[in-house]
Image (tube, rainbow, N blue to C red; front, side):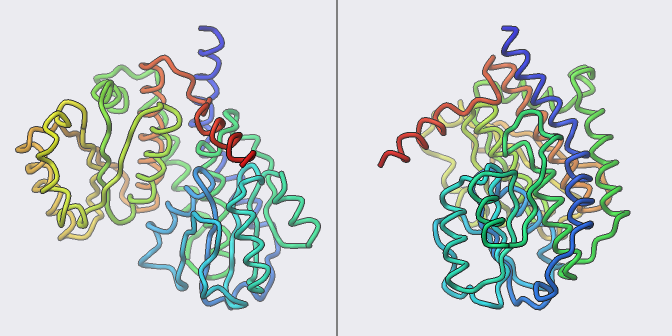
Length: 350
């Protein structure tokens, strides 16, 4: 039990280090000099898997109405056919050994795309150094858990800083400081020291025991919802699915009837925001009504922040704490990923 408590401590310390992760990546990228030709690209492709792609997902949904170039996230072995010399390809692999990301890097070299790498080391770092490819090889000192899914502050901070330096988006130092302060406040709100009656993360985790969360999100919170899903899967060893509004309204509501026993297992979690578009906001109470009329339990989380960027990070902290409390309730190691490790070991021999 002592060893398990140590694992919980590592994850808790990492959640509390999210602000430091964001600041470290933002500051270190801003100290770098990026190639001038990166500023003239026509599109951006981010290649990454699992935890290494979470930051890109969060940013993609956050800046879709502000970014000046198209962005595509690839979770495959190969890059899009359209990628060429006018494409900026960002290869993201926390370990540096993700075979899909390395395969995409090879494709990018053949396509003569402009390349930037984000990693802590491994084969990707070796390749960046060998071929003199620009990259951010960082020291993950603010990730004591050593898990890629818990290093999301680094990936978000790095990509935001890159896009800002290249003029793809407008984001200031004050914006980042505001996000950091929002995370610090959220950490206090959802920390272990707060009782369940004053801590919705604890309350929701209790409701989700022996349940499968179905996350529902929209617009700027869709990417962070994907991060929460990933952490529920890996940290809490819990089945979790994600649906987005308004798309959900066009099919899932008719799929709530069968099999009937799902009502005993699923718990819908609506991630609502008062910054969603007016028509999207109108869908949330109606959708929850349909869910309830079909016999399902549901909960709703609404971030308090007044800016989209801050809401993303507030929701990240909330979801990470819920996943942490779930892992505690199940008495499982939130850092171990035995089936992912098993799969990778078997795959390496095929």
